[in-house]
Length: 404
Image (tube, rainbow, N blue to C red; front, side, top):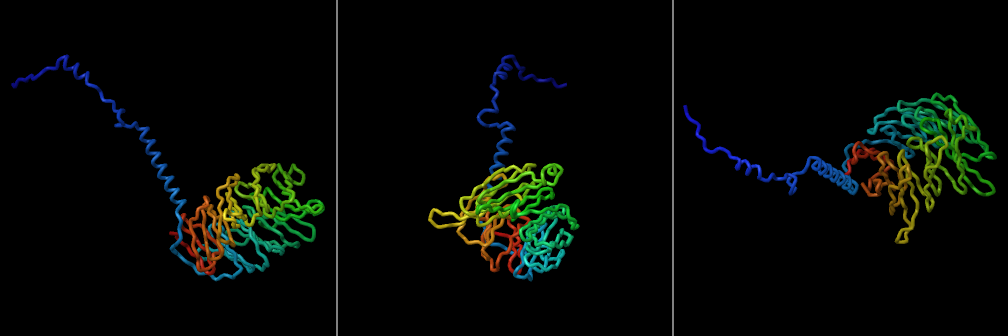
């Protein structure tokens, strides 16, 4: 048997020397980062990357495009185009056509109107002959009902269930009527000028429970506008004539009112814009005064804007575009030197301006995103499925473009 050979046995002194060796602090000299700190650095890095990408996207300007698809159209000169439920609505004095973007017919309906106007709410649409007697209700599936009035129509509005409100006027008397989509009268009333004035604009909430009228009065040569809010719910029925609130503005004309997101009311005058809270008494949330007369207004469900004239530093009079959200916060104030004949805000909250062939698209920060001169006149712009895709409704064709 082989014997074990003992080289050296540990002694107490050796053990003491080993125990006295300094233990290196791995938290010192930056050689080790705790897991939580590493996560914070990673999160900070990701945030920097995201913010950088957003800033680059905001500042990038495109002046050219590729045509992905193109569809020819044969339209009358008087046709008007509208984006309805992600498809294309075209209407004129002869009728209305509802097609996919590529021109495939979904449905159409013919009528004979002199001055057709429309209003849209979700899946319903109303077309009416202003100062005429015909009103047609449609859904995304087609024609629902025709209503013929004995008194000329001033304005019609539609709610999301197909209920419509109609403002009628003959001689000095105005009439307000609410119909369901089957044409049955739900509410009817008269407004006499000696008692109230002349209604010039109307708005209907998306659930058809609230109605807003803008009524002009002229007393002893002084004009004023009264905004009257009606509520047809059980709470509103407790008030006289269902009127839950009214506001009078002296020396002011308010020709446009509407309900937007969450049924907040908004009113546009020639010198101010008023936003209301969606509560029973309809209190004022914000008033925005405009120093000069408003030339144009535009809005969607989340933002609104206006164009007014402004004296630039050079002394030249230029147009100024201002855009706000529904809380009254101003997102954009931009001087524009180009002339325009149409300005709109898209569903993606970008603003487009055209003067016929020239098209400019701005983001909410007032930075030009895309500008180009098209060979044919631009009638409308519809956002595509990505941020750089658009459908351009031109004179005789529709193009799906990718800006670059």
